[in-house]
Amino acid sequence: MICAAWPYINYIPHLGTIIPLLSADVVARFLRMRGHEVLFVSGSDEHGTPIEVEAVRQGVEPRELTDENHAKVVELFRAWGLSLDSYIRTEHPVHKEFIKRFYERVYENGYVFEREEALPYCENCQRFLPDRFVEGTCPYCGYERARGDQCEKCGRLMDPAKLIEPRCAICGSRPTIRATRHWFLDLPRLEGRVKAYVASNERFSEPVRAFSLKMLEEGLRPRSITRDTKWGIEAPFPGAEGKTIYCWFEAVLGYVSATIAYFRERGEPDGWLKFWKDPSARTVFFIGKDNIPFHTILLPALLMASEGGYNLPWDVVSNEFLLWEGQKFSKSRRIGIWINEALELFPADYWRFVLVALRPELRDSNFTWEQFLEKVNADLNDTIGNFIHRTLTFIWRYFGGKVPEPGPMGPRDEEALELLRELFGQVTDDLENFRLKSAL
Image (cartoon, rainbow, N blue to C red; front, side, top):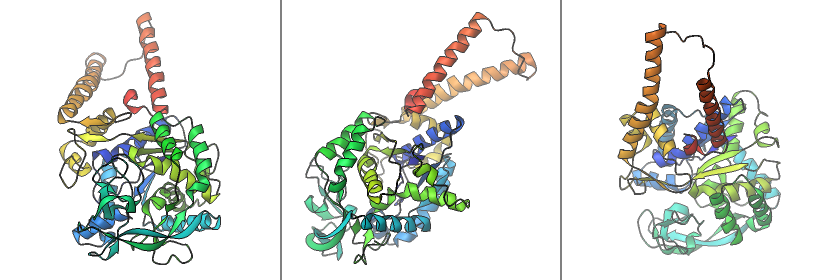
């Protein structure tokens, strides 16, 4: 089971966003070649405040924005050569149905409780400010553009009421604090089991394990499942009318619903079970480093709370950030290049090769046009292209364009074959352990 992080579709993804999807695609293709039964899934994350904020700024309804962007993204991912088996969206009826039934079960199992919470409220916009509707200074690292759900710099999950110097992301005014009722996942009850799972998972890389254990050692707090927004999946809890489910609490389960949708479309409604409930199946997640806690802590906790016999993540493969000429990608400041613009400049295979070669596996990596041109010209054209051209020319010139029958093997032939076997073994080991840069 190959799962790639669901991109927000408040706008077209940039090159950094496509790296987890591209990495997952490389591994899915490799495993299929090795004869494994593979399902590669992802989807468009179209709920939550990133979408609402962008829709407000454009003066359109959220559904209008996501309909347009989802259609564009589907075509772009196809043009990028992503071999996805199932790519759905959070408005997909199978996803919405699954999420409601899932949380009904978590509620029935006693892992959801209701309580009053004090949250930022914008008097000017006349609305509560969950998640990305509020920005401010992170109380942990001092980053001045932290969001209400997570600090982009230190990666910590955020309580919006704790932001220093908070401001409304729409109008910029300072919010007041108002009380509202919400439904929470009782993470402290699940903390021991989640910690044991993370500590015992030998597949996790050191950065993934260290980041996750640090958060667990600091102690898990109950996390609000619901939001005071209209755009999203209605919360199924008694008394929660008018509330929706926080986008991360539903999108992180989308890998399951995308699998269910895939098999329903093929008339095999129970086909998904072999990928999610068969103990011999393996689930691997490809994500950016800012999504680590949602996949190593929140997702396992939810699957445990459902008591549904789901497989926990076998591995979570994260990448660091890709920088653009030394800076973070920024839509507002026009820093970087987006995946639609990239294809207007060069073929998809150029981008696929270069981005895997630059994949930020252990530390942030920097994209420059000089590197791009060097890798395309030196590696693709000169090394690989030249080798293919010279081989085909030789066959055409000396053997009439037909591959000749091999003659007897000599010592140098045996040497070359042994070297190829060694290289094949190294590349296979790298790909099986998701070291894509090394494999390339």
